[in-house]
Length: 65
Length: 182
Image (tube, rainbow over all chains, first blue to last red; front, side, top):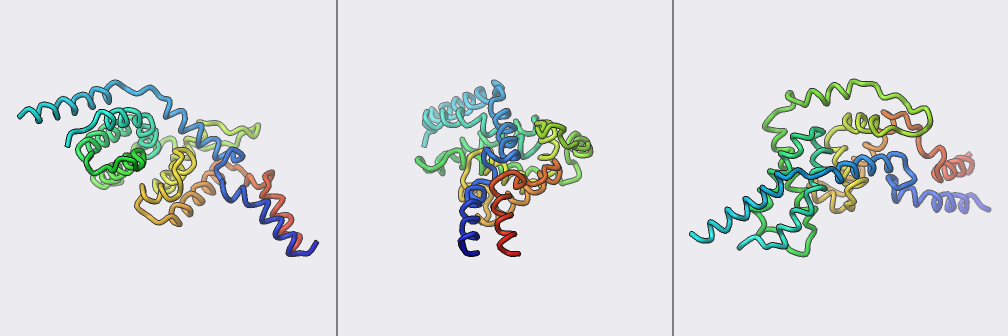
């Protein structure tokens, strides 16, 4: 095996890591997803649904004018 | 043009992601919900400028991010959340069992500059591509890449995770590279 072959093999080994440094094999990547998923699954307060309902009724009121 | 029912349904569906992104950016739950509210109102007003078939989530994230930075400029840096500063001062202890605590991770994340935090969240958690993240942040793809990389290095430093390369395929590669260079 020449030095060039070894370097090429090393590059091959390295590629998946370089492609996804935050993937499931990375502690930072896993924690990042855990942190975010917890936030996403947080219960959404009612104020947002009411806000959209309000925007909608304001719009239909405007249309009647 | 009236706001379609489909648009409204899509807005509702996007709220959990918007809140997660808003908390990640502002590191404050109350401010985050204000940001989401402002985003929804703006999205409603500007719905005609959204091109159906394109990524609504990315469009909404862009609005939210712009709102966050414009609020930050208005408030000025000096009124930074005091709760955040407190936790930032708390020391992060390296984990005993190699298992990183989520609480420690949050403290570390909070210490990142906003541009690095948003980049690593968009790429590592929200599921956006580098191209999409670059569009959301209105910068070059290369800029996002370097911010993500700096954020990752900084988090590893704070959390004292000695490079994951120690046991990953990277380590093998660097050993091989090292020996071939010797």
